[in-house]
Length: 451
Picture 1 (cartoon, helix red, strand yellow):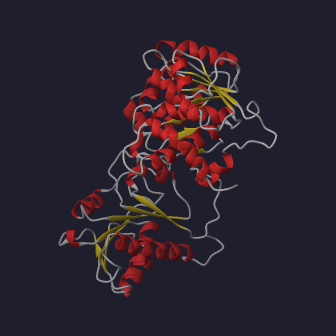
Picture 2 (tube, rainbow, N blue to C red):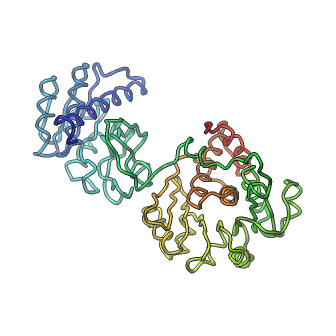
Picture 3 (tube, rainbow, N blue to C red):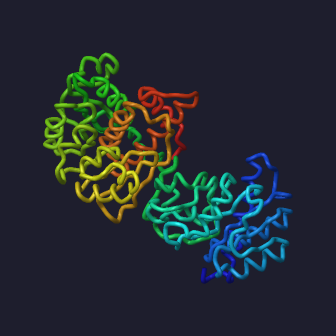
């Protein structure tokens, strides 16, 4: 900011915002800006200034733009620019003909604002209920840095972010309030992030590939002690996730051995492994499976039933893969609280158990026990993934990546990305089962960009 003329970044942001609003109108089949009624909800910060300058650009494109100033400290330059372009400015809420607006631009609160909305903002949003909303940088009222929502907030159809994504764009529950997120590059020089999300090129760089002189043992051996007489399908699904070609060999030990070998004849029995997966559908054998795997001294993936046996650090590299209910039981917290604060609780559990914690959810949150390692949030997947057995597939897949030599944080986050992408691929025609997700993983791996 110090190297640019005053207001340059705001002008860049405003231009990006205006064109994003025009694009949003076109996507809804309304054409461009000409003749459209645009209502700006303007607070006291720079987001309000962005909205005002964007409104001026829209007014010059023929839109009927009106600004409702919800603060006495609205950006003076932006107000002047909008008036000069033919827009109208009102102090406070305008209660007449509100529902005839074509789009609302939320410039109420910026990234420095506190969570929640003031009464006048809630009143304005109530009058404009049902009108599509484009939020400036973040939906007003959410907690930007944690993704938490505990008060009144805007629910946007489109959020236009400047320079970089913010934590609330990635972390639930706030991410669900953002709608579609569109990034506008305004030329910021950015620091290292505290939270990140992998993309296809990142995963491609992590996926293990055989060396020219490699063999099945150098590629890694993953062992699974999962399933039971009660839940034999969990064993088959976990093995299906592990047996995707990422590791050189898959071992299975358990009551479903004959069934596993019938479906996966290449899977072998007991022996040494570079990583173990335990817990999925293990029922009464979960504690002994964890004790055996822990004694081996190799990295572990701990899921489902084996999570209940934990009472502190394991002494070996480990990845815990709970959903909110399982994590709640493990750390004695309410499931609803965990779903409301996934970042907080994933970090807390990672520190308590000295392990990587993969907290499953719509936006899976992956935290390392190292506070300097960025938390990763997975954005791949589909609601069709909410099906029995999908977690078993994920555990096996992560185990293969761990056995192949990836660090726990990389194995967990790459596994979550591939798992979600496979669900999206498999569900292209509609519903998908956990078996279908496992079957689609090799195709997703083959589709990754070359490295």
